Image 1 (cartoon, rainbow, N blue to C red):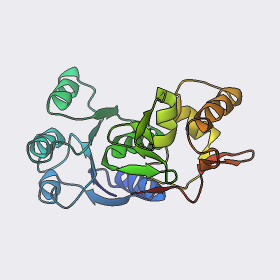
Image 2 (image 1 turned 180 degrees about the vertical axis):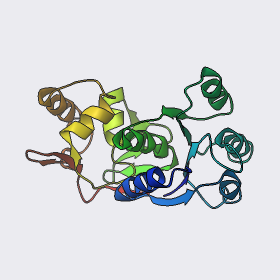
Image 3 (image 1 turned 135 degrees about the horizontal axis):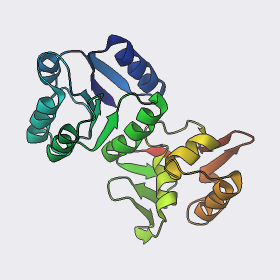
Length: 218
């Protein structure tokens, strides 16, 4: 999965690229809006755009993207906290807006959520499949009702299928930053295992959870 990052702060751009590469993304950095614009059509699954960059500002790049690539997720990152810029970003179709300074971990979590949109089907076994685009679990073509947290847990593994999700990562992503505890996380897994093949979720003791190696995305 390829991501375009438009950020003229070279140090920050490198930090973002390193963090995204650890999540198994392919990243192209651009420091000038016009240069980024010329590469928009190169098969990217997500765009991360700073507003104040040389050549062409990030909102203008966003406007072009939305005219030609309506469904590809776009995120604005900016030190400009002016309400007008934030409003314009959303009016032109950004999916999220992060104010600088921000934690790289926060950016990664938001990118992982956005890029779920580019995935297709999580195959748990021959009978159970989760459709990322519809956010629906199917058992033999019949829909299985999931709670929001159960959906978020499955989507946590979208960008890096077999990584180990730590307890803190699950708390941040599934509980969307709200504080929780290990008892609640275990209760969630217990409920989810009643709806999908039990062995689909693997416990990594003292660390977190992962999906079984037999699970795949198609």
